[in-house]
Length: 186
Image 1: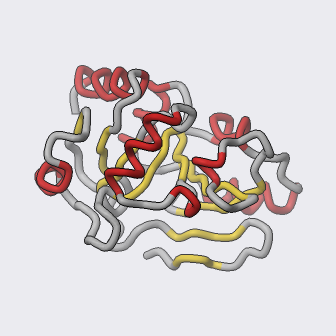
Image 2: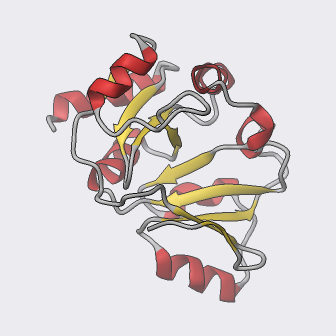
């Protein structure tokens, strides 16, 4: 993927746009997590209720720290051992984190992705981005740019073209408080 296309995606994020990009298993939709208008637009495209909460992906843990309460040492060790990688953690969220990110929860879903494009995108953007599967609720997630284009008919500001990360199913989600697997991955 060209640096030009990556810069276009970063400009779209800073401008409040919704972008599409490959993740570990499916194409994802993303936006600036602190822009309520962008998040609302993404939720409308997904037909997803705000109370469910969203996932943030990042290039490294430092990008996620402003959103999270300090982690106990044992949990931090477990989380860091799984990253970068295809594990999303539900971790204790700072009370000031907006409702549109955490939904009706006192935790936030976060992941440091091992997908090189996701890493480069978050690094170039300078922070985490929202990451949710590219599909309207109830439909199968897009696995290629053409499907994204068809599903969202010009309502996505930028679509990054690159291979998926090789997983057959979306990433595993683990509850950081209990260690319980909430959604099994591949």
